[in-house]
Image 1: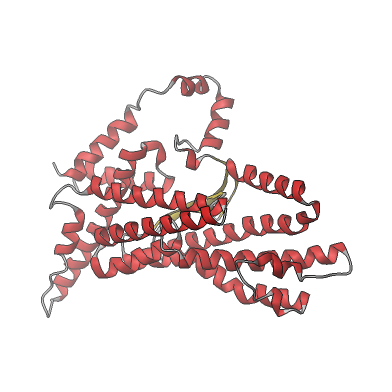
Image 2: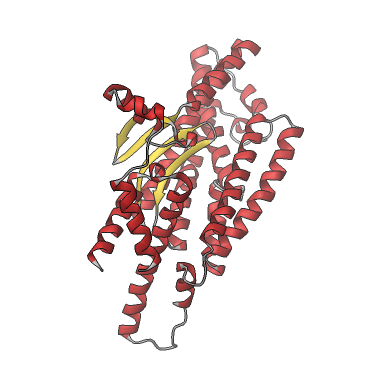
Length: 368
């Protein structure tokens, strides 16, 4: 029995005979109401990074907000009030712009993922950005365009938002400014009434947040930032999946260390949080690679072996090569999901990943 079939069998056993639950879970099961509330909040996962509250579902994509996101917004507003109540006119629009633009950014990932043949069914908003549950086909180009979908949304909004700010303020200083001193630019916004000033500052907040999201996501080559995943996809094309993942993770660890130093020197708590989280994600990727390194029968070795083609392949050989590539891509996706089960349990799987594994399990039982 192949390694994939063995994993399928173990998955079926997990689904048919679930592991004994902890006492607090059993108490939740005693009450349908509490159990329903808990599943909505914790998402059926023991991973605290995924705990959130469902907001709505549109286009088959469920949008959830992490439990810490409202806490972060409230803390930021309270800090502003304690320092200077007038600052609410600056910080309030920024919080609104952050939520809206991050949501649009994640939708960009999801829609492009579906466009390239993948699946996307959930978005989680949290203090350090957003997480879109996307499962593109196991190809470098599909991974590249799925990742690029988010920054492309911000790039498309760059000119319209900048034009809106200029039309409202008549100042190029409010449109083009030093990103390390944005408050100087915001301070140049003037108006005769509070409502007019709030309108102008809201437009400026959207423009500033959009520029920040675009630049930070593209220019920082570190997991889980888009810059890291774009770098990984480009390296994947040249040196293969495993080596590109390893190289990107190592680069990300270096970048995280540099960011942490700058965060400490300039007392930027949010930047420090991003650096620590990015470093943890890069380290996790390296550990995942070690877990998957189980010999020559890996799907990566198989996919590399498929690159030997004759100079003039026949039509049948081309068709066989394409079919083999599809099989290798499916097996690679199954390997990724099974590795996720081993590290986080069955509860960590998304609905799309469960469907993928169920289809593979049915094929395995059918002997195909």
